[in-house]
Image (cartoon, rainbow, N blue to C red; front, side, top):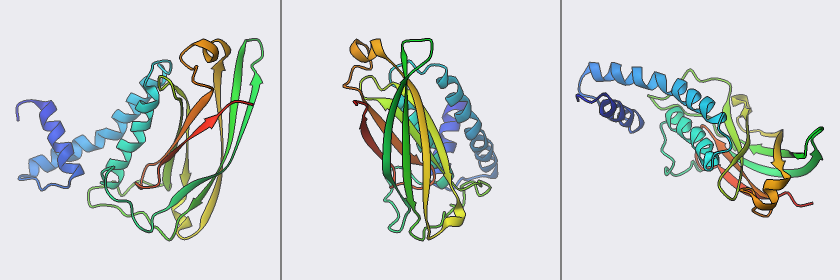
Length: 216
């Protein structure tokens, strides 16, 4: 494999699909490549945050937690979800709007209450997954527009591993700007409806998205 890009791609595929590598040199190379993934993803996300006004950024930021889940769990997105897996549900959403001081922009705020049910599930690590990951299950929240896929804001929270068979409640507050002019005729002119997407970075099958109307 003379092309380093091809070699890196094949080593990542071997890691994800748990393929057996023929020699120890490939195993060491694979570990080196995989160890760089969290840093590369963090760098990509940091750079993308400076360009929130680009169309399609909503889908881009939705992809980051999915990629992290693949490397955290060794499970592909199309893998059937566990029968006793955890679930995340919305219990309440409150929409508030106020005018930002000294400007014609409105600040929108979404007060969201989540209910988390563990259903006796405990995180399982594959042989090649990162066993040193701590702090519970990370859940990413991404908010975007219907038209153009513009990113409005993002947040996250962590579900403690100690919950096991318990239920848990989490309150999240999302704030974002919504230009009056753009709402009427620009890229956000989609009836003032936003998309809220929730992605569990350790378990597939409990992701969801909802459309939220900002109309008062």
